[in-house]
Length: 246
Image 1 (cartoon, one colour):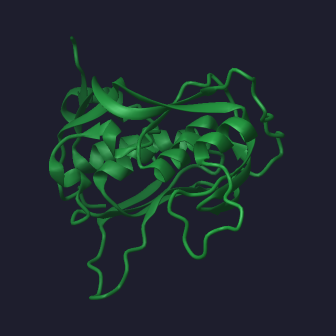
Image 2 (cartoon, helix red, strand yellow):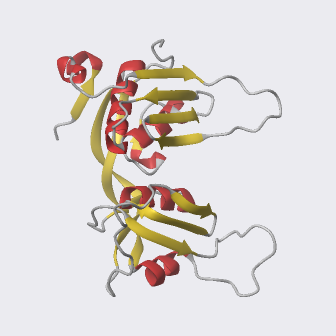
């Protein structure tokens, strides 16, 4: 099987033609004072600015390449260790879309960490999100709907603009396992999902609600099924622990 490998050394002029940020900073995260909790920003886009805070290289790659779980990234052990954390602040053109900013992030990570990577299928336990047999119960978002989470907590999230790749990312965080989009749905949808977490915090509800699996089926018209089969994994062959200076 031929592996697709790319790096600064062999991509050369092709990398130079990829979109890049106008201004970007990539630095190791500062050490935390004793006893202070770690605040992590796994990736945010506000207008033309993209930020990550206290993220591992693995988490940064997940955000850049639309991956939903650490299981979809392989490589040296340190890329997933919290000891090696990084802060990214980058600004693109005023009219840049989210997709364009993430592609710029790919370029930035390639340049600063001197990455060499390839993709290959590996057998990984995961979930697959698909349209349920009973049919879809959600509706496409309105063109002028805000691109943001309207409400978010464990057991409930709501958005008037939710693309499936972002929805699977949120589900992956809840289930602590990769969720792969098999819906075939293009564009954002209105999503309002409520369920009872497996480990609720505080006092138990008087009338326990549905599991996340039942809620996804009954409220959204989607199915979430466990699988253990090959999925594409991004493999880091080489990376520098210290990013190239700004």
